[in-house]
Picture 1: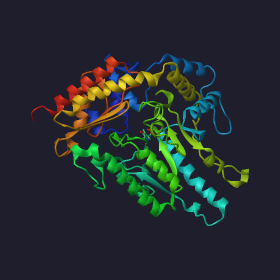
Picture 2: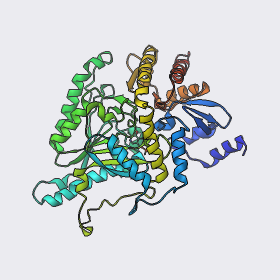
Picture 3: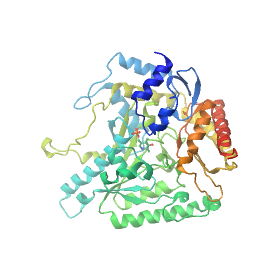
Picture 4: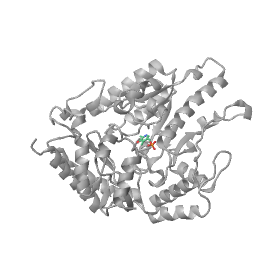
Amino acid sequence: MLKKDLKAIDRKYIWHPFTQMQDWMKEEPLIIEEGKGAWVKDIDGKWYIDGVSSLWVNVHGHRKTAVDNAIKKQIDKISHSTFLGLSNVPATLLAKKIIKLAPKGLTKVFYSDSGSEGVEIALKMAFQYWQQRGRDARRETGDAKKTKFMTLVNAYHGDTVGAVSVGGIDLFHKIYKPLLFRSIKAPTPYCYRCPFKFEMRDARREMKNEKCEMRCLKEVEKLMKRHHKQIAAMIVEPLVQAAAGLLVYPKGYLKGIRKLCTKYNILMIVDEVAVGFGRTGKMFACEHEEVRPDLMVIAKGLTGGYLPVAATLATDRIFNAFLGEHDSKRTFYHGHTYTGNPLGCAAAIASIDVFKGEKTLQALRPKIKLLEMKLRKFKELKHVGDVRQCGFIAGIELVKDKRTKREYLMSDKLGIKVIMEARKRGLIIRPLSDVIVIMPPLSISMVDLSRMLDIIYHSVRKVTEVPA
Ligand SMILES: *Cc1c(COP(=O)(O)O)cnc(C)c1O
């Protein structure tokens, strides 16, 4: 197959996700053929740093021998067998490993294939839990009326209709509104984009964050007080709202939400899809504030970025509400054809073992420091409005006017221009609107990380500081 044929075929037959295809069809598609460590190579033989971890999934690099071998070994046994009414070896072993790593109290693993599905499952489990508990109680507890969800402004939990219903990013979600169930939206403490206008002046924002966090929690509590009889669960992305543009909560906010959920008898669903598996410097973001959720969703990094496996973890309290005689109809009637896929689970086991074997989290510490240090320089740039970091995740927000934080127009396509400039220089990244996202594999070397940040720095300058 000729390279130019491949490009033509792509343009002719493929519809890419989250991509304006009119733009895509005007340009040469970049087609990846190979990867090694933190690098990927296109069909023209050019190598790039994979600065987006193949969309936030890759952990130990591409072609990691231990993970490669685990999958090959599993292929020689069996590639798939159903998990409905049967079990398999890797899925069983993996479940034990996950529970050992997860926050205390989570005891059961329900598999699926993507973060969105994992979220749908958590929502359905929480919903059904209260229905069945209510049935049991037979008193006027009102549990069965708990049919609503509480979510945060700017939240992103996936693209399926249920996940979109608890999402809060207008750009992605607004058009589907007639299809969605209504959820109760609570404010986040990220003042800069605070829709409740608890806003602070930018320069003093960090100082006042703590105060703001309290105000936000108060607002959450007000809503809970009013609606708790109807609220089945609250869903949150722990520590940082990723797809919203890497909006980091101040310390204590997540823990505050946990306390309020407990106080008002609302289940807490934590969506660790983006931040799980080391991204924040700990295995799970919840650990930073010793939060124990009732339900937890993991996906992206679970298989080290190899195969689509997700899981929803639940407590005994929830699991037990689904037990009963066959005809009690308490079964959780949900499952996907590829649930518990043995190849994916074998990859996940190998990836988790690498964390321990290579002390991945320990090795990450100096890289987080380096990232922090190199980010400082960005703050001085004329069109950088904000720089946010949470462990090994960072976002650089580009603005038209640094003082007023006025944003660029969507038609300016600033984020896209910057990443295309970076691409010329050998780096693949992907923006969230005008936020440049830094999310390389945890295994990236100090040298490559440094190089990545230099490329971004020069690309931002080149694109934003040229005379118009
Ligand atoms: C990516 C993401 C999802 C959706 O996961 P998919 O595997 O893309 O369906 C859900 N929640 C968060 C926080 C995410 O970052």
